[in-house]
Structures are given as C-alpha cells and as structure tokens.
Amino acid sequence: MLLKDKVAIITGATRGIGRAIAKRFAQEGCHIAFCGRTRNENMIQVEEELQNLGVKAKGYVADVSNYDSAQAFVAETLKDFGHLDILINNAGITDDAALKRMTEAQWDNVINVNLKSVFCMTKAVQPVLWKQGSGSIVNISSVVGLAGNYNQANYAASKAGIIGLSKAAAKEFGARNIRVNVVAPGFIVTEMTGDIPEQLKTYWQTRIPLRRPGTPEDVANACLYYASELGSYNTGDVMHLCGGMEDA
Image: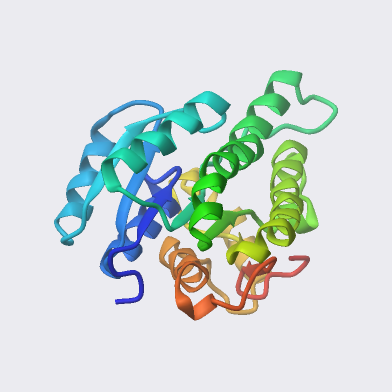
C-alpha cells in the first residue's frame, strides 16, 4: 500500500473529484479527514464508504475559506488522528458570468472558496509539517487557470493564483522536505459538469486528442502520485491532466 497509515486532509471531499481522491487514498491505506460546510447525508455516506475500506475516516464541519475555521479544522484533525502527512486542497466552486456583467460578490465568492482556502489550509498545516520535516501538499487547479476561458474570469484568476501560490510555497518549504505540487485537470465528468449541454460536451471532446473526458479517478491517481513516495522528487510541478486538450 502506497499510503499505509498516513493521514490526509482532503477539502471538498463530499462529492466528485474530492470523494474520488478520498476513496483512492483509502484503498492505499490512508486515514482520511475531510470537511464540508454542513454535516449532511453526503458527508455521512463518504465516512461510511471510507470506513468500509478499513481506514479511519471522519468528516468535519468547516469553512476552509475562513482562516480561523481552517485552523480549528486542522487542530481537531490532529487531536483525533494524532498526526498529519498530506493535504489535498480540492474545494472549489464556479459562478460564471461575462466579465462586463460579473458582480463583486461573484468575484469575491469564487476567489475566497477556490484560492483563499488554499492559503488558509496551507497556513494551518505548515507548522505541523515543518516540525516533522516531511509532508505533501497537492493543490487542485485547472487548465482554465493556464489558458483562461470565456465567462470565467473569476474562476481562471483563482486557479491561476493557486499555481503561483504553490510554486512559491514549494520554494519556501522544500528545505524541510515538504513538497507542494499542482494538478490542473481539464474536462472532468462530475456533478459540476452534469448540466453542460450535450452539444457543448461533444465540442469539448473534439478538442481532446484522447477523445474522451477525464474522470474523477484520473485526478485521484495523479494526486496519489504526488502524495506518495512515487513523487518524492517532485515539487513545484503543475501536471496538465487534460488528455492533451488544445490551449491547455
């Protein structure tokens, strides 16, 4: 098992990509702490699913875009699990609009959830990883953060910011054997993409040389590489996980 007896915090793990990451890590023997803004049926289901794989798993109520809430979440995780090895910053939302129509609230909400949360969680885990002299942080960006996209200025800015933050942190943390890497997915089939018209989905696939969208499991496998010893000499990386998508 690649992550046997490791402990990972995964944000945004009650569905989609985050849930797939949590499941894949649990299959490799990793204990999982994850969070959501409310303790709902999804959180309970993920807890049970992971526990059935033979690992310790617990969902916490936390707003990771809030500094104090992120600090409390990490403190509770350490109290319950005893140590921490991995942080996966996956929490993210969209709130699309043309830039000329985008409101300040739309901008602030997306930047806070997608980008500020990475800052807050990284700050919260840094003292722990620094003291033990090891750790892996994997941040989920997007090809939109590399190439931009129509009607997604807020989302593109947040995902580009994740890349810059990660590269800076990789330089600062490397001397303590703390690795910081980025996975930048392309078109991944999740609940978030479920409402996209079929015609648009077909168009996107024509821009992908592999001729298929990605899956949450594809993203989970990329995160597993960076979180485990397989990626022990990688830091400051940005993996374009997009099937060769044009403009990515």
